[in-house]
Amino acid sequence: MTSSTSGAGSAAWSRRSFFLACLAAPFVRPARADETIVEIHQFKFAPADISIAAGGSVAFVNLDLVPHSATGDGFDTGTLRKDERAVVRFSKAGEFPYLCKFHRHMTGRVVVT
Ligand SMILES: [Cu+2]
Image (cartoon, rainbow, N blue to C red; front, side, top):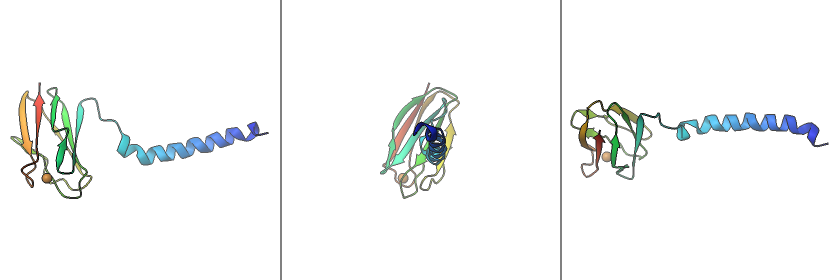
């Protein structure tokens, strides 16, 4: 009895799951292999200290209500408002310290190898 409806039921369920997955996608979308995410949250860069391979990118994502930036020698995300992100590509090896130009106690570092 119930087996006759299970097909339709699971189809409806999977449509609903697909719909929910689409809604969730922006939040759970995995980073590209060559992209490292640094979240800006509660006036901190997290993780503040990262190491990437030359040619890789860092996506800075502001989760705070207030604007932030990631500003270093040779790069600047510009002002990032809530939920905005900026991707910075690092092509040369080296150490790239940066800070938030609005809150200079907020610091981080990208080590490119
Ligand atoms: Cu800031």
